[in-house]
Image (cartoon, rainbow, N blue to C red; front, side, top):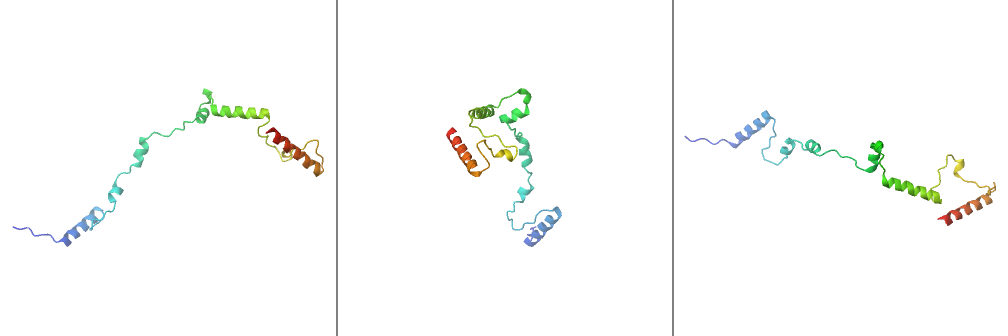
Length: 132
C-alpha cells in the first residue's frame, strides 16, 4: 500500500494553524528574524551580579570616611604648605574682599582727585611687577 503525498498547501495551512494555536511566529519563507535572541534569557543582570561593586579607593575618600584614623593626604598637605610659604613671601593670592568698599584699596597718598588716585594705582602695579 502506497502512502499518498500530502499537498504543500495543506502542510502550509497546518503550520499556520499550529502557529496560531501555540502563539509562535508564522514564517513560511524561513527568513532570519532574530526571534531566538529575543526569547533568550537576558545576560545583563547575571553579569552585573558577577562583578563586585566599584569602590572609590582614592586618598581623599579614605580621609573623609575614617577621620578617626588621622590619615594624611600627602599631596594636599604639600599643597597647603606651598600656599603658606608663598603667602609668607608675599606671593600668595590676595584675601577676598568682604564687601564692595574693601575691594578697592585706597592708600593715604590718595586724595579724592582722580590724578593722584591713578598715580597711586600705577605705583602699586609697578611694585607688584617688581615682586614677581
